[in-house]
Image (cartoon, rainbow, N blue to C red):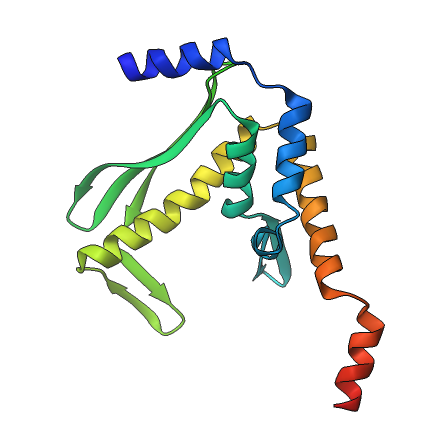
Length: 174
């Protein structure tokens, strides 16, 4: 309880400067490694689903400041874990929480099988938790800030690729 009070107290004492936070987020998006991981994309039902990745969401949360987010395994029964992902803006007291169950089953194209190895159980819970944590962070941070970050990451990627036409010419010659 004291830790939570201290976090809220510090957030109120040092409120975020949104312009400065946005500058820090955009600066982080200039890093090539973050820009390369900033957007996820996968095929689903004949279309592609894409959006800001957990790595980008974490970078945004770190630089938006006065936020707390995480994933907690609440309990574990044979065959299933109950997990909570959350994001909390300590300054505005806006919070998004998702509680969900994770079956200890690995699904593959060749079928599914039960997980018994504690490491695999942890990894599947952490993976599912990261997806929900991303959703919680993105629910708290203003949408225009997230959109600006995604655009900056796209710019960074374009700069690192250089002139596409010249690259094509070199590839054809090679």
